[in-house]
Length: 412
Image (cartoon, rainbow, N blue to C red):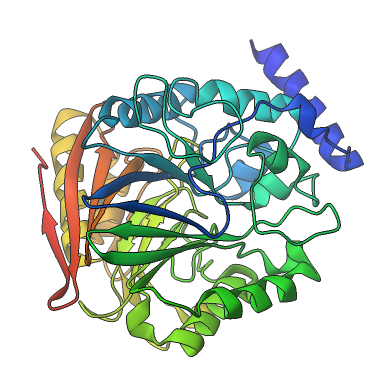
């Protein structure tokens, strides 16, 4: 097993180093939930799942980031848990926040297909389907790993035929827009590529596209991009990587007004998190990067100067409390090193330092279930406990009249 893993890691590294072109025809198709500019309409609620970073481990990259791998079974269990929720009242589609592969090779896209077996519908198309035993369609968000060795995103095109906005010249766009109409309310969904440096000249194409699609008739915007504007993953300040995420959000707010953007999802660091830095009537920043890849530390607070903020940001207090109670429960069941407990509590040897959940002893794996019904949004975090079970431990509910209202759920 070890020899095979090392050999496949070598194959991956060689392919990426050579920048080998990938043939989209050799990658299995998956069904899109909505093509660019499509409208999905219902009189009832629309529920969907959000998860990112489902890839396998990249030893050098993950080791340098201080990440800890807890085994391939973690990602498998998360996909099975989402699949178990599919049904009339469950997710109609999956938003994958990127880094589903270690690099864009035929082998890696095959591994992605196997991890998603039974959850994602296979076969091209964007016609609306009834979720069922065969699976659900998806909405892909491009991450840095999808671009690794494949700057033209041919692998993404092969896995999701028809993905992206139409930009011509046989090129693949990593941005798109569709509308969710529910109970007479229209949510405009923007899928964007936050990787400014990796897009090169296409960055300005995306900016111009954004200026066009934020015009028109709709009631609110839901934003999805791989790299976060605000993020407490890892022990270092890695918010707003490359400047792209904040630039996109600032552009949208300048064109539409902040009140049009209640929710931004990202999946860059390998953590799950909730931030509400501007209070109940501000934008919620949710991290959906805990999909099974090597886990990273999650700080409880930290500076946000790289994202243009003078004050520290912190985990949304109810979310932090839900995690802390789950951590305390786990610490009573297993032996956690005193230093890891001190770090989480910011006490003892970590008195006066930033509190953080250690990725080796308390990874923040899980996924988000989001329900849009009329003008309201309901975001539930489904936490994978260290012993491998799943619990809904946190809810963030939005209504225009009251803003965001957080609450703890089951943390027993």
